[in-house]
Image (tube, rainbow, N blue to C red; front, side, top):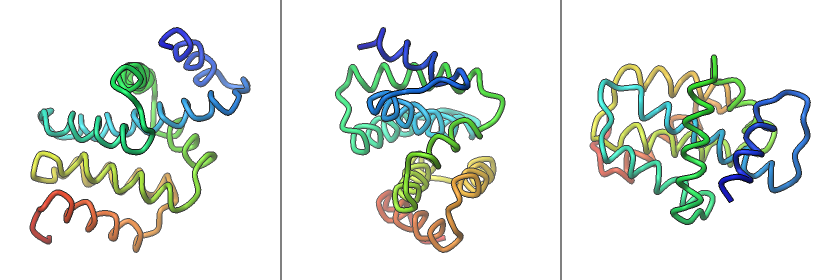
Length: 157
């Protein structure tokens, strides 16, 4: 499985290559995981709660077992390190997801950002930037934030 994902990953980051449906799904997983990992790294420290939130989101959204999640997480970390911006990830999501799915991704990003109990200014900036790149409107952005806040049992704010 890991060898297959690595082979896919080399196709995913090389322009002009085509993938099959399985490759498309893995591309979406890697892109989503990369954005979640970037959100986790936005504040000054990485909490275990944030790591757990990413694992939970990826397992819920893509129904991954522990080995699959570990492989996707490793590929996403490699992709995030090589990326110059977020466009390669958001464009993959924009190509593969409808509006409701993109709102769900934004909600999941909020869940990771709120996992440690507070929102950092850098997290807020990244959220707005990613929502814009994913073409998520302000009303959906705010609603996703509120759902994530309620799920995290944080006070309104």
